[in-house]
Image 1 (cartoon, one colour):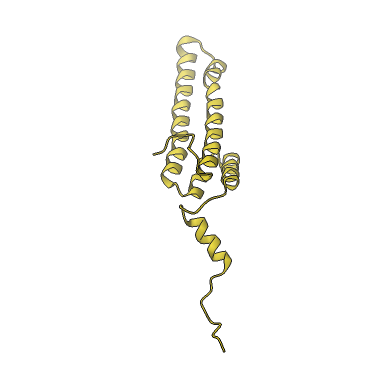
Image 2: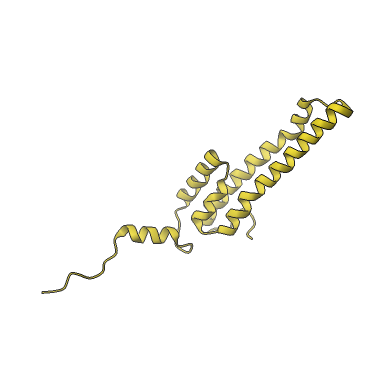
Length: 130
């Protein structure tokens, strides 16, 4: 009688190992969905790079928007403070000076989603590699 006690791995173990393996092929639609959901919930679509196994790119593209936001906030506060006390610029004008950067941030998020999708499809990335 044959021995059926061979060590067989379950399909869930294979799926988990494929998920953690950065060289395993990833689903481009899933990568884009993860990036979109991270953008909507956390404002960090670059977290999807972790799904692709690119930790360095995830870290850089997650930290960079916060650095830019802090710089823009400082510009806004300084221009509002100086405007009120020296040049007569109101808070509305200072807001109008900063407002276009919101569109740049949205464009960056869309580029990250597109980049994650293209990397998962093994195509040329949209954003620079590090």
